[in-house]
Image (cartoon, rainbow, N blue to C red; front, side):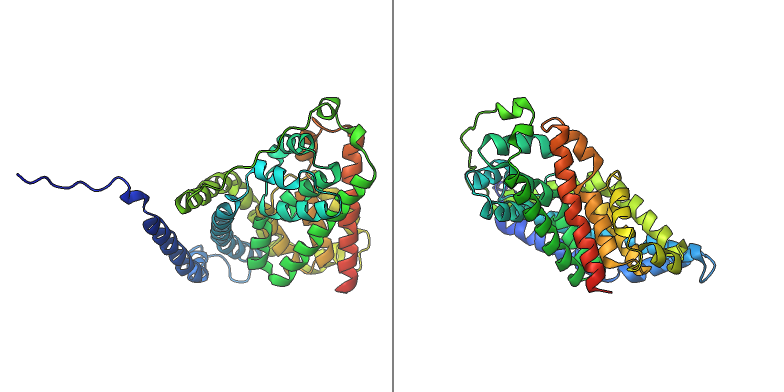
Length: 351
């Protein structure tokens, strides 16, 4: 009597199969992305809108950018989810604990690029960093860099507006995070933390063992994709809708006069406007794309984007749980000054 062998339960967990499936999915992604423009043109044609009208321009922008941005976001988030599997909050805290200011600010800002914790993570991260002995200024460098100079912003900027703008954003975003954190550290404002945070005793930093398999890391990428894309897709569509309206209806001359290089007051104005706006990098970048296409100055546009991402009002509300109002005011003031400097500098350099 013969016994039929059943498939091994480990077959589905074969690293070769998982890596092969991941590579096949990436190849399929590129195949679809290359045909996206033709597909979007076909969809726009089916709408039978008046040729050359404002509504047709807006519709073409929306129909093309919506799948494009969502596809780019999916790929970038998956890739960086795999990279982020090497960095847990505990490991990040351990890497920064005991770092001196200066080098610590640079290390913190660099780690922030690869560990884009959202504003809802700000309180536990802040307390964990401070209680682990991370200097206050170093902690601020991380908290500025993480939401502002993250992989989603850089990936979408690179794909939508080119490597030069992405590189500019990376260099000056990190500069703001490093310098702002260093300045706050030099002011020695630890006494302006809430009392319960000051009383937190430094605990031993926990380093998570690096035991994850390649399958675990691919699963981390998939989980990041489900989590982040699932949370921001609606904001992306809203942002693309705003960008489509600007692209189709905003007169180039008017927008250039308001956000152009010659309007010196536009940089502080867009920073003031950007702070109360709640958005993420993925949602604001389609707006940035539309503004630049309409003649808005690069410095003014970057200042608007940075203020929306780095100084969002909801994050200030959350951070109020661990900081006094005075410390939040210093934080906003220092970061806003850096953003203003970036706006004016680039408007001057690219005039």
